[in-house]
Length: 273
Length: 155
Image 1 (spheres, each protein chain N blue to C red):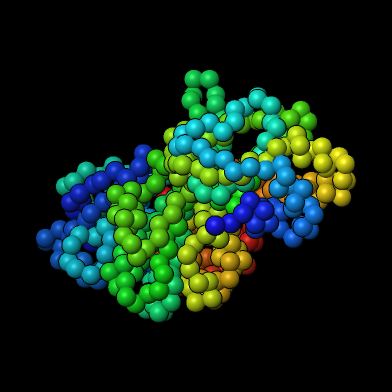
Image 2 (image 1 turned 30 degrees about the horizontal axis):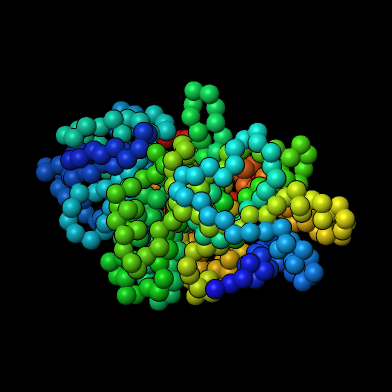
């Protein structure tokens, strides 16, 4: 439960309000024992400000630094994003459930990300692409407010340049001259090159976006029980003790953050919880 | 290679129309092409035509003084561009521009309006179908007002 001090070894700006930090444990503090798997999160502590849950956006394999992509929206995330290389942050974790990568192998895979939701999904996409022969068609659908809000653009372009993966992007609005699609990310789902009945879907983004995406996937014919979502709540303890992240009968930190969509769709549509 | 009649019959907006109606609609249609970036129609101009996108993409743009152009929607293959031909005052409300090379079917809206006046059943059928296109676009525009990628802004 005690944060392990980590030094920021690199800080890269992804968009106007989003940065990716790479963190390594301080030599004297021992190593960061367990690396987060795709879908899991760490609690990152900005000393003197507070702690927030941030999903891993890096690879589980290897012994490189921890990678977390953070959007500066509140006091803690702004403090974390402001950390320069050499600064120290605390890390607790990893916590939570993983993307069901073994379970989704064998069929088609559609990954639907909205906004910062691409960060927790990046390790899953990387896994699918590095184990490409274990999947059928792979489709990555990304939505963002504007082209300037798209994360990991060089990596998206790299995925798109491959012949064995489909990458499509939709933005809410764009300056004239944008050659991509303008519209909701759900508009990409009917055209995704997948066989819905044998497909699995991984979805991450704000809940309102996931609600519409799950509906569109089911409408396309993807079985609800083959869809997983990653939920975001105000997690504090990360071990199911404090109850801050309770959503109906579940505690997001303990039981999630990755859930079968079937368990979440009703809860996501409840107006007040 | 498909004929114009077949392409029109395959379009979702004309799905399940009878052969007589399809022939009548095809009588107002022709194949057209646009270069990348070419303006298809401009806001404020008379709306006498609508388009069925075959290949390529159409951007709908709004222009605000001092702010440049803003793409507010794109139209993809199989979808129709333009409903202003069906409603007074028959003028375009946006600019439409080809995003990449575009192949489309252009329909003479003024001709079709005349046919709809003469054949009220066809007119009602087309009105329902274009109303559905408008409803779908309105729903998408409303959902986008939610700023669905904005998140809750905590932490």
